Amino acid sequence: MAWGAFKVRRTGGFGTVCSAVIADDHAIIRDALGAALNDEDALQGQKIEIVEAVGNGIDAIVAVRKHRPGLLMLDVTMPHAGGTEVLLEARRWSPETRVIIFTGIEARGKIAEMVEIGADGVFCKGDDIGEVIRAIPRILEGGRIVCSRFTRMLQDGADLEHLTDRERQVLSQVVTGRTNREIGEALGISIKTVDRHRTSVMGKTGSHNAAELIAYALREGLIDPNAS
Image (cartoon, rainbow, N blue to C red; front, side):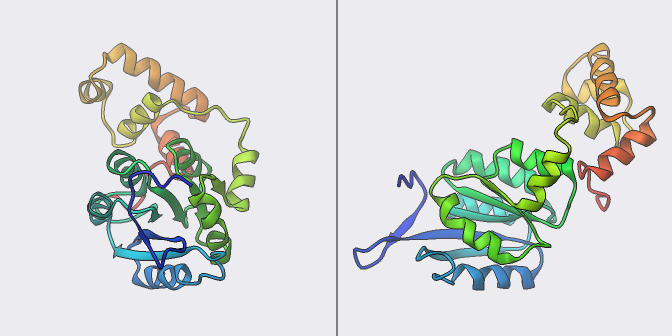
């Protein structure tokens, strides 16, 4: 098994200890995950050392840069920086870190986004934590696992057209109320190009106006309803 650049600590000449960072804004969940990661029987003998547990996205990015952990357990919705931003930054600073996303957001669009940008595991907070723990050894060996609930969700929506990265950027700008001119200036593209992407987004989402587009984005978990 190639551990790459992330840190491991050898113990007694037998096996290794995988370092881990836990990132969730609820202390009770951080504690529960910490306890679960100490259960070597459930982890099939894999030893995991929690090097840091943090409660917001910025601290999660800092922890990844500092420790280059073998494993990052990451909540999607956190203060200061969301799971998408943290995952992208983790890939930038510690590309060998295995990232497991766990979320209470059961929206097909958000789950698809996490899979598309490279999460190694995606799990639902409403499921048994045992499903996550049993999957960790396989994920550390290079596997990618999506929990059964989210797998069914993605399969049910397989006939929907996916938005491109640029279309997602335009969508995120539209739902904030920006005009085509403002979107073009923000993204460095022409108004005509913005209009083309916007029309494509409307068609793919089945929306006829900005209100329906916002409703779609909320339903699919593409925007945070609690964001200011």
